Amino acid sequence: MKKSLFAAVIASVIAITLSACAAEGAKQVVLRSATGETGVYKVGDRANVVGDLDLTDATIETFDIVIEELVPGGSWAQFRKITASKGSSSVGFALVKDEVGEYQYRAIVSGEEYGPFTSSVLKVKYEAKD
Image (cartoon, rainbow, N blue to C red; front, top):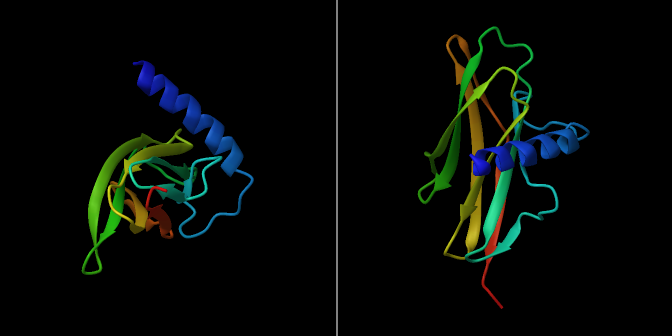
């Protein structure tokens, strides 16, 4: 319960911050590194990603948001699946990588007779520890 409340508070703060940013990709979802994070991390560190949502034009109440990761070989694979409601303004997820590299993520928003809408790609870089 505490974790869910904390995530909701963080998501709200980030959504307000992101509302001033121009959207890239589908207007329904924009992936960004969490406020205060650069998108570059050390191996083993936690990266926090936020998806800013604009679902105001939707006629349904519940949405699936599938987070996909670009895997070796160049194909997209499901990394996470999140359910959101029309009133949601953002969602978030965290990741930790154990190998150096640049990882790519995108979000796909869909619902019954709505979408799918795909975000632009977010790149997250992991570097070796000093």
